[in-house]
Image 1 (cartoon, helix red, strand yellow):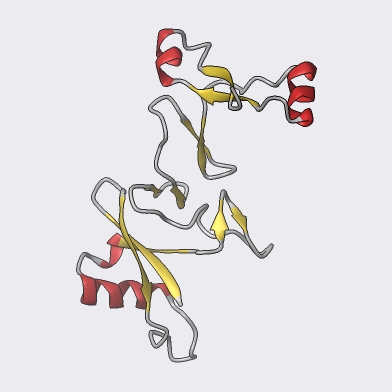
Image 2 (tube, helix red, strand yellow):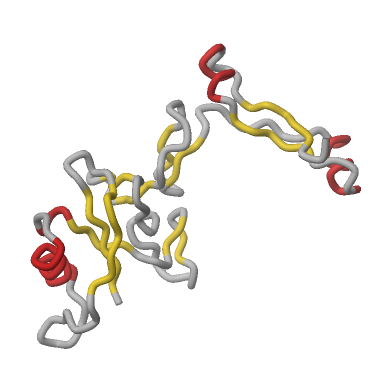
Length: 153
C-alpha cells in the first residue's frame, strides 16, 4: 500500500494517507501518478499536491537496506523540498539548517564532545552528561548553543 503526503502552497505537509491497493496500472503495479489522481479525486487538492512517500525511509536511510525514497517518511508539519525532492521533518529550531545527506535539520555549529572524564562517568552510570541545544544561547552568541547538562542531577 503506497503512502502519499498532501502539501499546501508553502510545501508544508498537511496530511499523510495511504492509497488503496486496487489503484494499479494495467500491468498490476503501483504508479505514483495514478495514486495522485486517485487521492485528488477522493480527498481533494490537485494531483500536484500529493507526493508519494516511503514508510521505510528515515534520515535518508531505508530500514531494509534498500534505496531510500525522498529522504524521510513525510510527517504532518514537515516540509517538502521540491528542488531536492526530499521530505524534511518539522524544523526544531529557527537557526537549524538543512543537511541534504540525511534529509534532516542540524545545528549551525558542531556539537561538542564529552571530555574523557565525563564519558567515564557516563559509562560508570554515575552521571548522564549530554549536550542540549539552546536557541536562546545561540541567538546571544552564534558561536554557542549547546549546553552541557547531567540528566541524573
